Image (cartoon, rainbow, N blue to C red; front, side, top):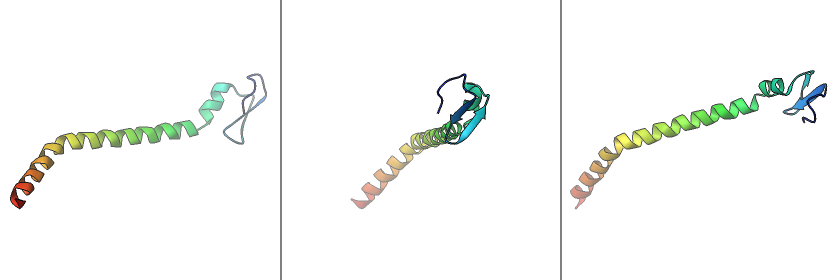
Length: 73
């Protein structure tokens, strides 16, 4: 809980307390935001890999289905 910048104790992210710390040092000490950003970057990278592989393999898969469909008929 952050009430005032001039307080001697600022509580951030549960029970973490920074004595005589500034607001910036509290945000640097809190790791929840960094972890969320890391997971977002990983998810973004996986999404990009899926889109690129779909674009590369899409034509080959369509040709394969066409071949199978013509062989069945």
